[in-house]
Image 1: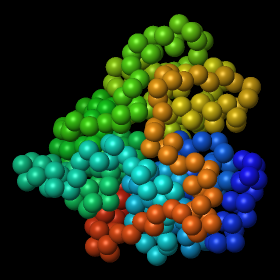
Image 2: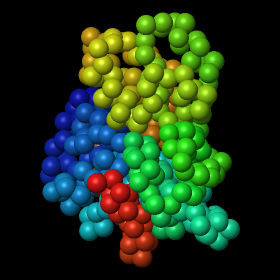
Image 3: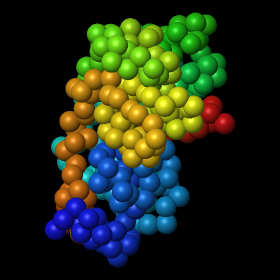
Image 4: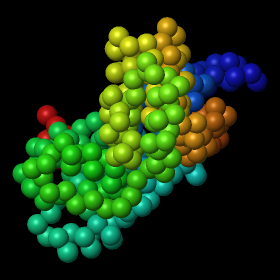
Length: 305
């Protein structure tokens, strides 16, 4: 089959088999074109709760599929590729968090959404990259343990000096590949371009940005800006998506090495296999895990409204 023929078959099969396809924004264009929803991980999880389909296919990584299951426990949730994990999510676990809480009993533990379901069960509040400053700013606790991304945590700390934020060493290997040398080189090559970066980047990189925000935030900023050139400091698929959607503007990757290899594991063929009911891994979580992990997400929603 050609790409177009496979896409047409995926669209037919997802309707026939009552499947909602969620595609994280870091997926390639051929996959996002057949998805029902594309966006950030938590936004996709919320969309899944509203979708009428009884089966949800997450084209992303494991923690994202777990979050879908936590919020849509009665739906069948599939992960497009079993090996698609998140190194940052695997950098911490429930046992480590429990130890830190015993050592620091006055601290509240804030978990970035990029954590496993098991880690979320022992955390107090969950945040996304776009909501972290607002949510933590509204917490009654002054003392905060932030896991697992120390770069996002440092960004939050810089915005909330009234909070005492303890960082745990960790971060996104993909975003860590971008350096100040990349910024200097990109500024020379594209002097009129604005630099838009994700807060998972190193603080030294973020400090030089014209805008810091989530994946969705970067996309919206670029779309709405009167500027015509942008250097994109997040996963390079965003450069491609923005160029398709805004052909009159120009987008440049901050680093050619900013590629998430776990996201790249999922191909259009894997999506086809999953909607054909021949592939994909069903995500199964114990009821107790869902109940406990849901608490920190519900607290995020409470503080965010």
